[in-house]
Image (cartoon, rainbow, N blue to C red; front, side):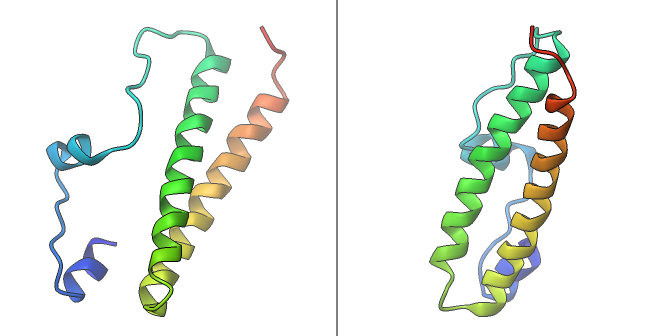
Length: 94
């Protein structure tokens, strides 16, 4: 995505500080120790990320090459979600 932003004349701010400043994700519960709860937290964050990426994907409909980059990223993110969901399905609720 960074390369595409630069190719279009934008700026890629790929620092941790920029990520923290611009994230829509809530802080991760650092003290949580329950594996199931941690996975549920990850799934929730993936859902937020997926929604943000889909919004960007829609906003770039007039730029097919850029939209295609978003589509590829969404595909990978959703695959990770499916895997986490499968992991949750194989674990009993606590």
